[in-house]
Length: 357
Ligand code: PEP
Ligand code: MN
Image (tube, rainbow, N blue to C red; front, side, top):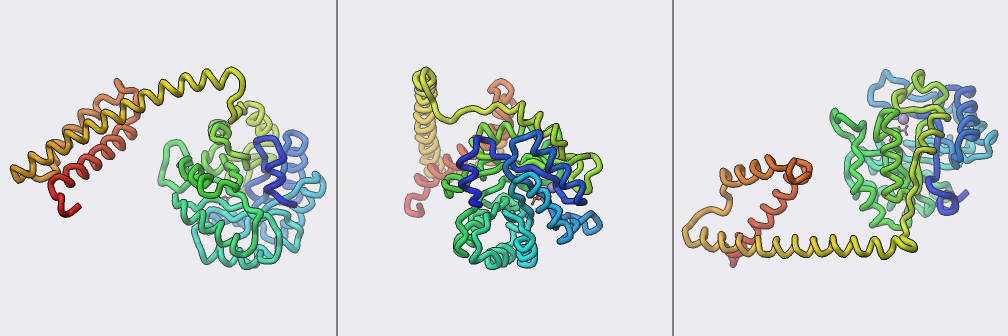
């Protein structure tokens, strides 16, 4: 099969579902049959070798589970996928008849491991899905794509599963949506699948993350699905039943990317208003930097340093005290003021040290 063609041909969201871990033949076969009944899933997933944080957790049933997953695929008529982390996994998975392989987040971080897997699939035409690395490093993610491309593998798909963070109140792995968006800019032909299970880490976070992914034009979703989620041997909190999965899919609002009919002119009017405001913002920024240069000239003439720490602290805390009036987040105001300050320093430096630019 060619996964990229399948994704092209199916209606959004292209759905990949199945348990975090394959636990028994009964478990994987029954949940996959239920997924088939309840949803329009296109691919079934199941973890055979599990990269767990602590060694005493369940680390997957291992190769014994491969034929169980393959059987679930045969019964439902759907392709199956599992995670591979080394050449041995690739060999065993392909021999057992697994249709699609995925590289997990803990593997994408390691170029040695990715290269080993790329070498192991060389000469096959097996579809590969590459999860983002655990750390928010776009180039490392792209590097993994390049290693497979160099091995002659062209059927490549990206899975966004969020990025590691210590103790976040909302996410198990923060989405940093700008990173998959940047991946799409660099690799426009690669399809993007979102994995809301590992991003949210909890059942009630699956719908909002899935909705956001759809609103950002992701092609598909990979959602962990288990017959009895609370009893799952791994990732119990984030798994849903096939019926739970169906409910999430039914609640998703699928909006269209293209503008049609009336909305073309309506959107144009609103966008022009916004562009008009953006023009004003940039005119103000230009005027603002002209004043910074005046300040820079004065500081040069009177031998005063560019950075005035105490003054800057006051400026920042004044703006941060007004974020509610502005209806902006503290983070946005902080980031915006920092960017403004950096640019202002650059302008002052240009006039203060014209020869050292
Ligand atoms: C998984 O999909 O079960 C998994 C281990 O994911 P990740 O590589 O995103 O941690
Ligand atoms: Mn999992």
